[in-house]
Amino acid sequence: MATFFDFNLDNKVTRALTEMGFEEATPIQTQTIPTTLAGKDIIGQAQTGTGKTAAFGVPLIEKIDMSKDYIQGIILTPTRELAVQVAEELNKIGQFKGVRALPIYGGQDIGRQIKALKRNPHIIVATPGRLMDHMRRRTIKPQTISMVILDEADEMLNMGFVDDIETILKEIPEERQTLLFSATMPKQIKSLAERFLRDPEMITVKATEITMPNIQQEYVEVPEKQKFDVLCRLLDIHGADLAIVFGRTKRRVDELAEALSKRGYDAEGIHGDLNQAKRDSVIRKFKSKTIEVLVATDVAARGLDISGVTHVFNFDIPQDPESYVHRVGRTGRAGKTGLAITFATPREIGHLKTIERVSKRKIDRKPIPSFAEAIESQQQATVEKIVSTVEGGGLEPYKAMAEHLLEETDSVTLLSAALKLLTKEPDTTPVRLTEEAPLRVKSGGGFKGKGGGKPRGRGGDRNRGGGDKGGFRRSSGGGGGRPSGERRGQQKSKTKKY
Image 1 (cartoon, rainbow, N blue to C red):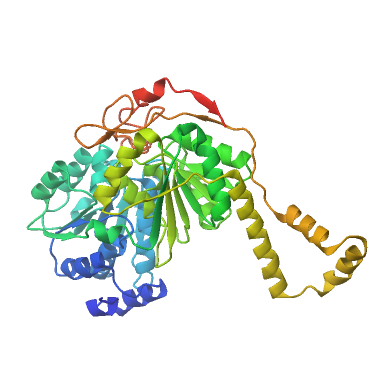
Image 2: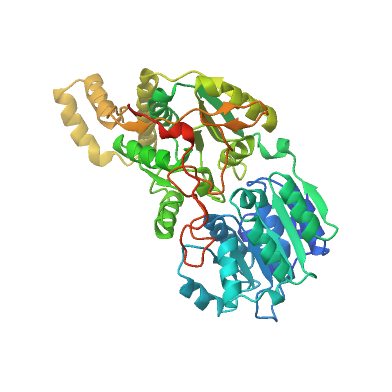
């Protein structure tokens, strides 16, 4: 396995990588970095979680000419969260060289962005709509750009950005270097590559390399109406430090976050209807472990790179195998182990088997945990805390009080009371969740809801009109694009009490 010293990088870049904790290069980095440094165009087929950002970020920063105070590189991303994440990582990699990356996205005040652009960043990480807006205003001049990177191109296709990307690429000088990264290679992405890349080198990280063996993958077959109680039991049994719960729609995310809060969990939700300040606040709380459960839609969670996620719960089975791999990849990072548990209703088992086949990974079936198991798990957690406190010492100030209590009550009764007081017993507060129609396999092997139709629309999050692209496609920062609407199978949805 190569190290970053093998690429003959500027010592300021290797110093930054060392401080960031990078040691050995991942397969995508080992192949992409030297090829990019050699000046070739690249098509990279790789999922989130493979080290893709550093794969293109390291050579981009290495090639930035510090004597030139203008934009030299552009990275296009599908979502504002990913734009922020990528810019943060690039600024860390370029910290000692002095390279500055600026995220540009819809939903943020354009006046602030124009002021930031006047400070002459070297790299722009942008969503397509807002980048086009700045190009129209001449606040970003494409003539100076020598490298373009399309990150998660298939997701930009799903969100309706292909026309915007083509418009942008036509404005940037042809002698540029272009890198395209995509988890899948649909026809439109291949066509885009044929038209805008010059003799590209294909770099592929296979599915077997991206499903990460250090993630334990399980599923529970559970009726829709029992899902929430089962989720609460699993959270209690596993004692997740940081957990992400994936819901299919914005409405689902809102209801789940509220229901978990009612049951005593520190939980908040994130989806495309939240304004940027709220999204940033939720992500910041989760990173700092102020909240223990993040409830999210697929698109809202795309690009989140948060270390220490111990558990992923697919409360609603993902729309397709690529989404499954993306969700599961949120845990088990940096060599740590993780657990991913998927809920599948009886009618969705065929869908689950397709995910197994495509991801080349068996997902172990587990029984529905009982209420008694949840209580037992919480009791055991309390015992472990008490034992750990004993081993930690510092109990002298409490011994006199303990001796006094023992004069009045026997030790077993006293310890039992302490265990009862400290144990978080499962909460059974009634909550209401709106039922979601199950996904089912259609004849072509794809997936659809009860009402049929494509699994993912332009908007990403599929309910309540509009998707996750927020203000990317209109200069006003408004929603733009056509609303995706609810699946027909959800229009007659019912609310169940749990």
